Length: 124
Image 1 (cartoon, one colour):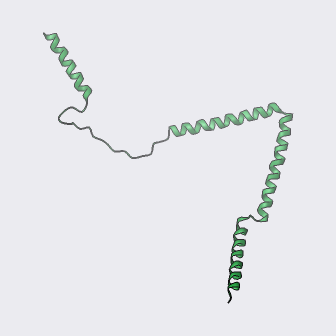
Image 2 (cartoon, rainbow, N blue to C red):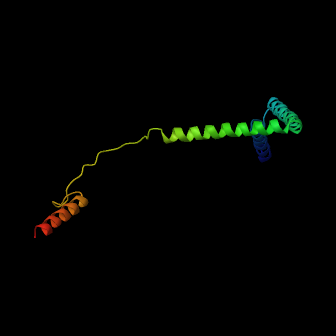
Image 3 (spheres, rainbow, N blue to C red):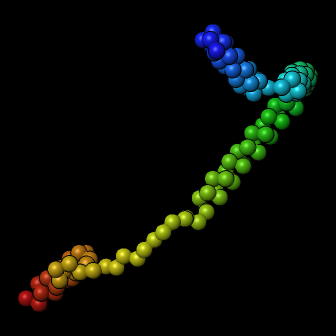
């Protein structure tokens, strides 16, 4: 085999691989037809809706307000459910302990000393 035939064979292999990958990337004609039909339906629906809004603006405004209220109610319900949902997690009990023989709570020590000093001052 000459180098020329090896190069041409390799070029043909690369071309067939490229065409296979290109076929997989491009959607089939059926999918393109469905997409076109969906776009046509959306366009027609938009025209009908626009004509309805021009003839009945009050009904359109009321419908938009109703949809807004429903969306707000759903938002509030979701937030309320999240606020009252149980909290997931792990916990462990931490025991209070004394450090160097002092009481664990400094406030009670201060209260006791004040009460003791006031009783001493009244007795004098």
